[in-house]
Amino acid sequence: MANSIAIHSLSKTYAGTKTPALDKLTLTVKPGEVYGFLGANGAGKSTAIRLLMNFIQPTRGSAKIMGFDMVQDSVEVKKHIGYLSGEIVLWPKVTGNELFTYLMKLQSQVKNDYLSELIERFQAEPDKPIDELSKGNRQKIGIIQALMHQPDVLILDEPTSGLDPLMQEVFYDTIREASARGTAVFVSSHNLAEAQRMCDRVGIIKHGRLIHEQAIKSDQSLRLTTFRVTLSNSQDGDTLAKDTHFKFISRKGTTVVVQPKKSLAQALAALGTYPVTGISTQQLALEDEFLEYYGDGA
Amino acid sequence: MNTIVLWELKRRRTALVWWTIGSIVMMVTIIALYPSIRDQAAQMNQVINQLPPELRGLKTGGSGTVDVGNPLEFLNSQLLYATMSMIWVILAITRGSNILGREEQTRTLELLLARPVSRTRLLTAKALALLLEFCVVSGITLVLLLCLAPLFDLHVATGTLALATIYTALFSLSFGYIAFALQAASAMTKRAATVAAVALGFGGYILASLSSLTDWLEVPAKFSPWHYFSPLTVLQGHLPHGLMVYLILVFIIGTLVAVAGFRHRDIE
Image 1 (tube, chains in turn green, blue):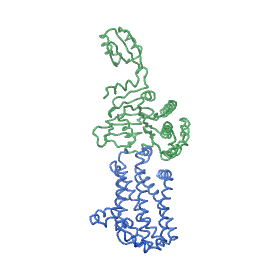
Image 2 (cartoon, rainbow over the protein chains, first blue to last red):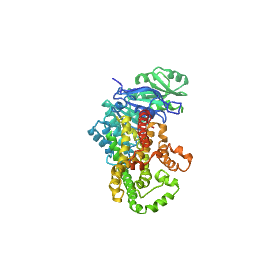
Image 3 (cartoon, each protein chain N blue to C red):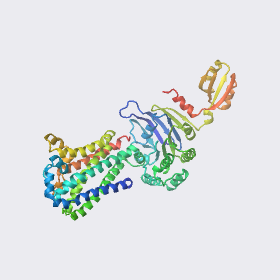
């Protein structure tokens, strides 16, 4: 199956700077896949999204969306995209309905039934001028305008910012439906719990470089369970740290944190051969993974 | 393209109404004074022609004597050269700077660029909206001027008066178009756009008006479009070729620079 998004060695160095804001980004997103793009402020997330949208020009590299080059075929690419910017800004005196009508005309893909469904689902207030809406309600208008034409690719920058927990649930459900229809979703987020919940795969970006990619949903229970094992002596700690049944995570004295590589039963059987004085399990959250890459403070 | 143009006009409708009212009120106020000024033309001319040349220049663009009892000279010195052109220059520069620049600043431009709209098409629609907004304000003012002028004894051939007013409007619009083209062309020119347009629009006016005062201002004044701007020449039935060349160059070069730059530049 062809990739919905294919980014190859995409780089951007802004005028007047020497350090690239984005450095040789290479990744793919398949149809129906939800890809989370994670990173700290200034890591290069927004630069990547703005490059994908052709708002800024790449210094090197290329990106294809639905097989079309983002620079050469920008207009064709936009027929397939729904976009939500990080800090949604809309014309203040315009109502949501006026905005939807205008953008629908520009998109030339009118799907009024779905628009009505989204308005109802998000309990949006499309009759009010934008400047009379709260931040959360403005965000709903932003989300609806990105989704309303049922695009093949969704590019979303911090989409749930300002939404209450109830509306966040509605948003996750809507994204799941879009994904089931085959829509590829590229979503940048600071919210790791949200990414863990919503995404099939995440990429962590730091200093403009993609430093880690990880699948989330597949085999999640196995991948994310860790054992905090306390042993009677440090020599056994050394052995456990090198045990091929486990992925070594960390060690402090005689306490070793490991993650099973194979099945849980095999892991427990292997642990039975060690002089264990204490054991606890924990879910290795995406946050731990994220901190592992960002934890050095660099 | 029509969608974007209509959207711009719809969003700007209230401001357009106020600009049109302002332009009309200013025009009517001035031409309504003509009968009383004509009756006292001798005294008025004496007063005006005794003014220092630089002050007279601010009203007429030249240092020659003025006969405000003559309808053509009245329309030139009191209405077209300084008053209407100044109002329209303010409108043109404000809109020329904002129609693209403000949208980029507030990032609403991204909403449009996220749709299947080419940058050239977007730019053309914005330029067309700028032109139409300007046409609404100056066009309604022109129509009323043509209707009202005879009522105030300003008997000038309709075609000539219309041409002189259109010429003044195009001249004023050129400064807005310069601001618009510089906004579109590159990140660097974007920052200088409003300053450059204001410097040309207002600085150039003062420079051209004062050029007769000292010799050393004569050469730099030749670089100001105001130096070539003469509604009186059009009212007298001639076309000032220097300014026509300036207008053609501004609109052609401005369009080329704006399109070439905007197609490939980073949106900030």
